[in-house]
Image (cartoon, rainbow over all chains, first blue to last red; front, top):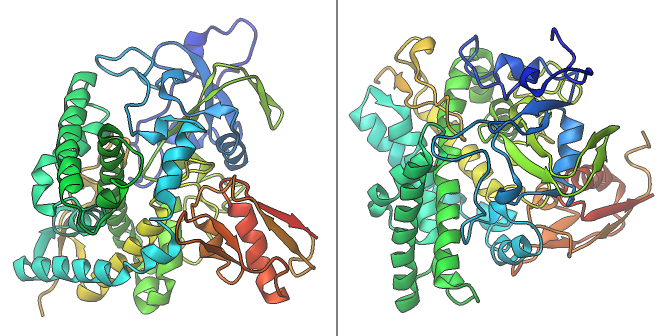
Amino acid sequence: MSHDPNAVGTTTDDLPTLPTDRHTGCPFDPPEGLTALSDEPMRRMRYGDGHVGRLVTGHAAARAILADPRFSSRYELLHLPEPMEGMPGQIPPAPIGDIIGLDAPEHTRYRRLLTGRFTVRRMRQLTERVERFTKECLDAMEEAGPTADLVEAFAQPVPALVICELLGVPYSDRERFQSQVATLFDQTADAGAKGDAHTALLQYLGELVLAKRAEPTDDLLSDLTTSDLTDEELAGLGGLLLAAGLDTTANMLALGTFALLSNPDQLDALRADPGLAAQTVEELLRYLSVADPLLRSALEDVEVDGTLIKAGETVTVSVQAVNRDPRRFPDPDRLDIHRKATGHLAFGHGVHQCLGQQLARVEMAVAFPALLARFPTLRLAVPPREVPLRERSNIYGVVSLPVTWDQV
Amino acid sequence: MSDPRAPLRLGVDRERCVGAGMCALTAPAVFDQDEEEGLVVLLSPAPAPEHRPAARMAAGLCPAEAITLTG
């Protein structure tokens, strides 16, 4: 860096904004400007509305901040890293049921209703169903082959079938929610389009909640109708779970396959020993960090590792940079399925850590080996540079992944 | 660093627990989650030597700092 942002006389205009440009180099690496900052783990950053807050790129600092209740998740206290069309720098409070934007004790009340449904044991009990959905998608893909868009044929439908069954959302209704969810995560969509998508999603879930109340079935949404949640809370919470279940694992599966195909030595190692699946999943989570960044707001002055973060400052935790912190993960830019990637923050940290993470682990630990076993000659059908990337989304990934294989 | 196999006493705080499941995933012989709320259940407050490294790792991974270690 050519200047010291903390120097006297430096105007805030000189401060860096959030680096987002991935155009240079490897599609799996964070924007160059981000990882260049790892020797300054909590640097000052200029936000979309001119607010001066922090950008956290160090693993230890990120863990400390995300675990500290003095850093709030309430949307209305946050400044957006980048300006959004139709929305000035700040965000309205969390809509009902969106527990990501709440603090304790409100957050705790909702989370407690859900944690028993997403335990390690319960998610592992879903393994057979995940295997069945995976097999059905692979069968259809093979039959239509020898080429496919892996996103459409595999990466999207497998987690969608699982979350729909778990929640009790008819998979056949997916045209009523899939594009809305995509819009909600799309950073190029303006505030109006996001508002419309959210309204449509809530309307769909609202109708479903009424149907479940009238005629309960064996699923999470039906079970929650016996809690003290209102229809509005239930629809909001259902929408959040559906969105989180649809678009996160799907991007991990497609981008993860792209990463494995781009690292043939790692691909071969996993093929040779499917027992490496669980740790491959952890390493792909670390290496790809698709859900990024996480935002917090300091409720009071807090000193973190010798740096004073002032009350009111927004902190942007760059999960992708944190998971490439060389002090925590040696040789961080190397995909290495033999490394111990445990401790990555791909699912966040603190009280908001991903509720569905054990489901995501089961889905990926089933899906990657099954895909590779079914298609021993799986390869990209286009040059790697032509794979379209989801550059401006809250969930990183590929738009499509054209693949091909030799028919036997 | 202390010897990972040194004697270990564990405590858990179910009020702090957020049911992420990292402990049950990492040290299943030592931690579980209850069926109803999915919150931490301590199976082994003084784990056998072979389970101590995993138990320490689970404590470090806990996102809610709900596991306490005493030597």
